[in-house]
Image (tube, rainbow, N blue to C red; front, side, top):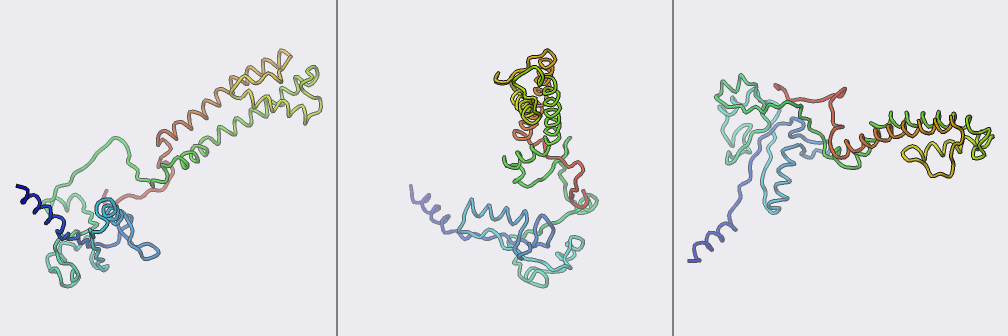
Length: 254
């Protein structure tokens, strides 16, 4: 009873895998030669991943570059007038041949009795490099987007520190009458009360100084909430990905 399954298993192990023959011409970013004359692009990457993940010892594909006269405009003419193994297809056996990439407008598809599947969505789909989705890059993007908020916060800190020092330097011993030392104390109080109520080591004693401090705490909470919300939105989502005011590429005929 076990003879038949074992025989099929034996044959499967020694089965000769026929690689795909990809007849291509260079169209970025699908398939092209880089600066080092190495084949690069979406399709070669997909085949390399397939080989690495499924069967590193097997060859899944062979690539055949067609000269510049072979374009998608005369692809059917070449197929009709040229046989495999001859002319521009002399190195192609026709066993498992793939012609790539080919872009056809809708009118040409209809004339060739080909069906086109359209995927229509309410949003714009943007293809980006995967490095932009790394946490380190997201933190960098968050810093760029929150830079205006940080500038506003820094300006408010300087304004509050100056007003508080002018208010407290006369009667409050915690604030020196000497500008650098007194302003430094005010600056310290501004920073520690930016998102908290401070540590209690330095406190304003005049009514106006206390009012300014309370007002600053409220403003600081709003600013800090904006910073936290922006960072959280960018790190946990991809909201920073946008094509606004940026150059983009699209496929011909789309």
